[in-house]
Image 1: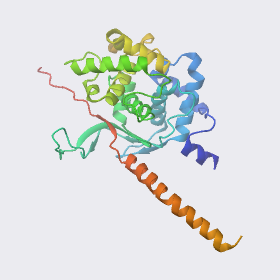
Image 2: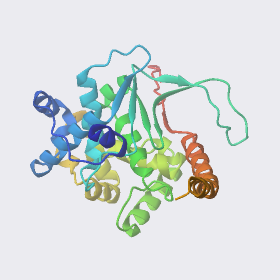
Image 3: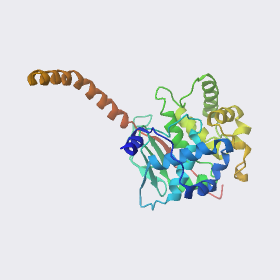
Image 4: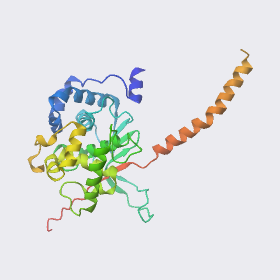
Length: 251
Length: 50
């Protein structure tokens, strides 16, 4: 009964990471971003994520424990500041082997619905699920500029405050609003942005997802080109990834 | 307490709460049906001539 309650309502004690996975967690490149002082919290969050969230293999994927660990490890980097709770509304993580095709139902700016399906590498549904392409999770682990886990779980954080767009729950928003608004407008004006994915110019929600990707995948470049944005995220996530060079080519 | 009175009280409570519960359920399912935030497959220019 208590396990059922925790699964659905997200409370309870944090779960320690099973011993067999402690060593494997340190093999995830991004775990090097976590300072020693935050490592026990990080391990506990990853353990709780693995116990509470149900992973579903889709599109013929053979789901392995190492894949679950990789997703949990990347997702929990975003919640080291949270006092407790590991994405409480999230129930399921669906993993496809690669990009997946989705029929479009939303009209474009002209009111037309394209009948060609759209290839997606990730989706974040409010309240209960995240869908990911495993090939793109692997690419993120190898240093690709795209980090679909950071992007989709940034949306999950954003959804904690449905009255705000592109902002997680914060004690105060003055600095956040000032920096994010300025950088968002800057990206919208930029034809060929050097670091941020132009997709971030779609909306403040997508901008938050895109800057989180850059923070974890190209931290040195983000610090160089958008230092205020980098410092804002550094203070929010309690991580300083620019101090660790994981992939020399991404610097 | 008389069973009839008890059933009557339960009926009145159900009549009062029912519409609110229905509205809440409708709001919940409407929210669930909101389109997801998506990450489209990035465009990769693999034309080596360019």
